[in-house]
Image 1: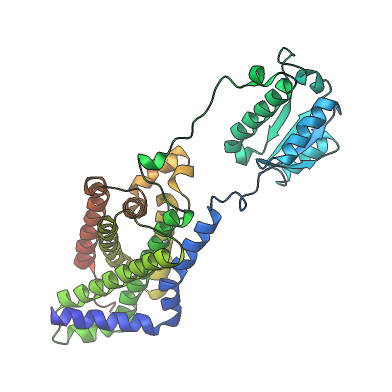
Image 2 (image 1 turned 45 degrees about the vertical axis):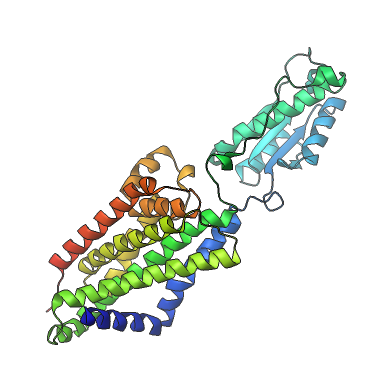
Length: 372
């Protein structure tokens, strides 16, 4: 065991001497976590309303009242257009998410609850269809307000009253957006470390370092075990540092420290195995780095390392089951904010451990000690 620790210490020191690799392994994941946390921040003042282009062809009292209410609210960001052609062009060029036209006769539909149905012409950017329902619901609400504004308060009262439900009482949610984006930051730290150590193994083989190590008293098993231990130590250290920074600087409050620790360990083991496979695939340093990051980027794309799983199309959700990143993100979120029990997190951890064991076994079996 002492020989394995010596070899692992050697690899960690080499990583620390590589300034570019050190920055990418330790600081890039933190930047990713902070970036996604700010991007998904739920503060009302940070998130602009849905940008729409609005055309008032009616120019009636009712249409002007609707335009004023939309402009005064926070749900939409209104840009007035002179013609419907101009509004459609703004949407076509990606300047606005939707166009809304108040045609002639619209004002008649705002005169009492018995008026004829309001007719609105709405067009949406095809890439932003998810927001169509929100805009339509908002327009329905505002037209209903205009129709009932002349009625007594008792008659104008909505037949439905909504009572806010505290979901946190059932399943505790993240206290802020950084709680669920730090899982992505941790993943990028693990990917960076695994890629760095995979390339270093290829580099040592190409430069003949492994041949010299094999001729030393160290056995081949201990040499690979030392590399794996160094990779494991680096990934767990990066993950722990990120969690501590999240707690101290960004208000992250893990719901279960033991679950989070288990998730970090299992994720690290899983990607240590993938690191060994990366070292087998690459014949040169350049090819190992290129193919390794190509594979990891695809895993991150489909596994939730770039986009949250809930915003993906259904087919991507199915494909994501094949990505180790998905199971690592799920396990980490279980300890960060999903309030998982050990029974909840065991399936994801089991998959990661199986991936790690299989990858390491195949990598050791197929590993080439020399290209000569």
